[in-house]
Amino acid sequence: MQIRFAREDDYAQWRPLWDGYNRFYGRHDATALPEEVTAQTWARLLDPSEPMHALVAERDGALVGLAHYHFYRSTLLLKDDCYLQDLFTDPRCRGEGVGRKLIETIYETARSRGLARVFWMTQQTNARAMVLYNDVAEFTGFVVYRKYVQP
Image (cartoon, rainbow, N blue to C red; front, side, top):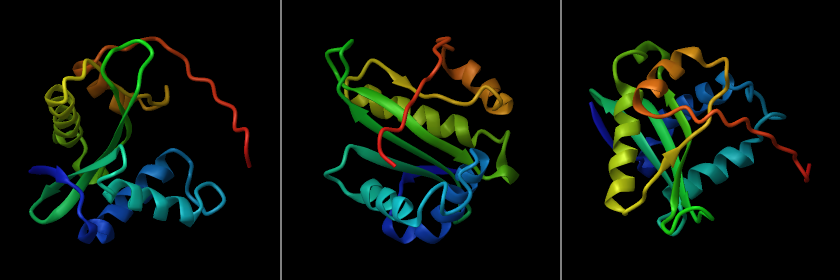
């Protein structure tokens, strides 16, 4: 398995993973996640001037996982933070180390930039992923609140 940055020609294989990720979190139709959001996300992930990045896991020529992350300023640290926003593994490959390898690659990327922290969120119901997360990171106990202020 190879972990690498996504390329423009990955779109046809990235898209089913992206759609699977969004279905998992209940964003499975155009009203939940408009097509223009997916198009803009893909464009941002490929734009070297953006702080967003996309890794893919490739096995035997097929993409089997994705990880999207970005860097941003922190009020608690001198260096930027790294937020792992999206992580998804093809369900047929779960438990085979794909997610772990994607996370470890992001850790290495953060270390190489001199960052101190990588973090992410998941739903409390994502028990299978939390087995991995509890092994590779510390559960902080934080609860997330949000309010959309624009339609």
